[in-house]
Image 1: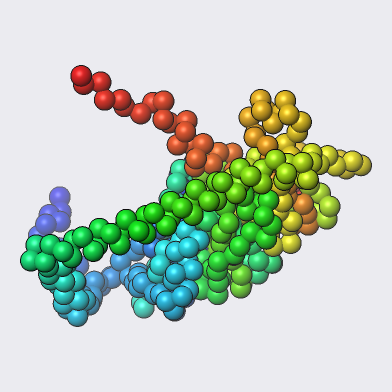
Image 2: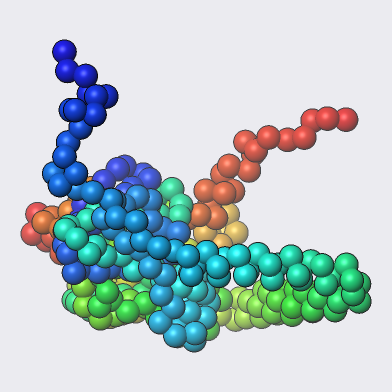
Length: 226
Length: 123
């Protein structure tokens, strides 16, 4: 599968499928496709669909293929932000819920749980995550701009809670105190920050969807009628 | 000047791509059945008003269960927060040095030049 990721902060992922090639996406992520492309919703098992719903994806996935010649399918994210291509053949990834957009057919999207109570309650990503395993390319999206860091063994990045978009399974995800009482109360990060310990790749976002929503609230039109 | 609207200038049917119409009659019957089912449900609510009560109660109970779970989640978080804060402590790494070169921003990319960090360290 050939693809390009285009755009700036509301990106497209454009995928070229040769005849006989297939790919899948979350329902509602397709933005355009060429006339010879065919889309078909597939559940792949009721329980799998339920598990997908629990981690923020759609009940059914949509398959795309062409019966006659190469086709192009374009996907977009659900929030203003970036789209990242990750290769799950190099190791499985954990992604924040609703991060999955589309992938090759051999990529498996599954439900994952936070392993530690502290990460679950204070990590900012909640209890449920998306686990991507198998082989092939996968496209994930989230709010804001992304930084990708390849952590060496023992390297630690402290990340503001809810700002870790995705990390390889080999990365240790935990929380630690943001600082002393002054920092915790006036530092703006609250009591905890997320700690990501290598080895493995991590993806960090510049702004979470919650922060974006909060920043827009003051500018929302108010009902001034009396 | 060539008149492109003229039938004489239209490309022959065999040349270039053509659109094939695939039947969706079975799906259309399915959609129609769903619409009928929806109308039947709405009609049932009018004919048997007690059904509305049952549905409203079911929705209310589900909503309350979700509310209880959310409240319990935040309650547990509030109770556990300070002990967790004390036990985790502030972690500061010693004897490590990091470089700005390791932090790669995500730009436009393609299958030839992936952006998932495979290039990290190679650039």
